Image (cartoon, rainbow over all chains, first blue to last red; front, top):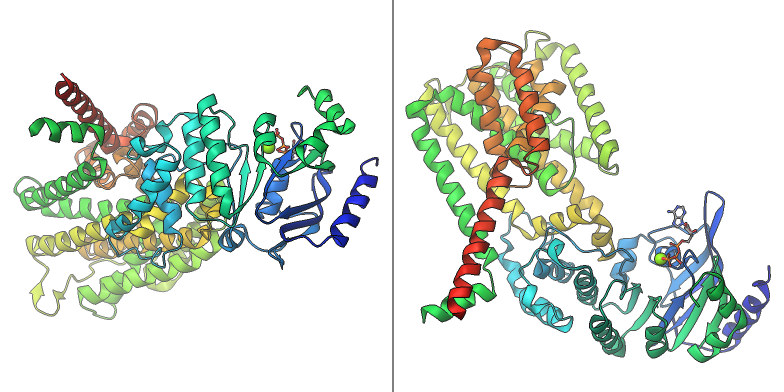
Length: 267
Length: 338
Ligand SMILES: Nc1ncnc2c1ncn2[C@@H]1O[C@H](COP(=O)(O)OP(=O)(O)OP(=O)(O)O)[C@@H](O)[C@H]1O
Ligand SMILES: [Mg+2]
């Protein structure tokens, strides 16, 4: 109940101030057999920003992502992307509109090579994907761009390795390269740096920053120093509710945020 | 000069090139076996191997490259067989027309059953394909034109294009070999096409493929239908070769047999199903004298494969080959450095 008040004042602010919102969620809710995983979440992602979604384990961050990308259907609520209502669209449609996500548990195509992983994303926009009679030599045209993307994440030396043989951190990097291959307008990253070594984290943070120059990023991240360094706007989620919103400075001073983080052992 | 070439090879292992080369070798070996085979083995037995090899290759498209396990592929093999036999026998159609009719019937059934089954996955998909195949079995048992328990016997082999008499086993062998080889090339092309790449991505991680914007259901349906077409063609040819279509063709044990062949040979490999079909058909033929023990032996092979060689015969050999190539490249890289 105590989360009600700030939500209302929050909504008031959104409705009066004109913002260029690329993604809007209103009253987003999802329950799993009576458990309210996401409960009346309002989210406004401004175009061109890096927006972080943080919160303790089980707060509902991944569920939010699943709702926004339509991998789950909300029990209640409305989602708009670039002003279009996408609440009832399919996940593939949403991806085609330019809202592309990564997964919390590393999601690569394990039996494909590193190069093929990226290429299959580049291939999406081709018109001959059902052409079972055509030779795959036509895909060679995509190798150049795929190589560039792999270079950006430092995987150029491993392009012919099977994705299954990569280390966990390298798989995350490959996943990022694959996601960027689609040139999404809005990038949703679910803990892109989980399992990465320190120098990989730096490189990935750098890449996210660079790729955010011409797109919007919404990311879930537990590493608070990364969040502080990268994000323009932060939404804190706890038990399915929005706890606080604003810049890192605002949010990190919020008592309820501090309390919820201490309460769940994040300190 | 040679040192730089070697170190290039070492820094960038030519996985693609070796894969294409070994595929070429594979086709060469198949062609050679087809040509030399009749010298040592009965042509009719070899034709049986080829029909079942095509059946398994079609099934493997779905299982190995689509990641979908169907327990009802006898339905398409059987429909191909019955329609082809009926067209040749009752309507007196020439063999090429009869086989085409059988294949088309299988394709039609594949589209209808595919639409019903494809939204399910895993065990539910296996169950629903089995249920649909049982439906076809009972239809074949009941309707008058399948000949019931007797099946359709003494189907005429006829004359190919009205010219070539197929009653001679060796002539028929030549024709079956050509169809077999061309279909194998088609299967290989499907696997190595833009479509094949998307398919493998979906098999590996469907949620990820969806998140990239692929409408995966359509790809799964497409590979299901392609698979049923190849299986129906195999059944249709089998009916002409053995001049017989019977309830065995649509029986669930035939669905099980094709799973066995594919797993024994190596699912997800191009030539695995051929090897698996050869092993199973040969076992049934040469061990026929010991009666129902054959099934026990088949079961034993199956268990051995599942426990010992997960990748099947061809998959295990390919892994071995890859490892030795990698070892050699490692050695040459070290040589280049020294
Ligand atoms: N498919 C599901 N079925 C049932 N309950 C679920 C399901 N998915 C999530 N939940 C529950 O919903 C709540 C929110 O989970 P979610 O994965 O969204 O949290 P999160 O914020 O991403 O946590 P983490 O930081 O651990 O990734 C949890 O209590 C979880 O157990
Ligand atoms: Mg999560």
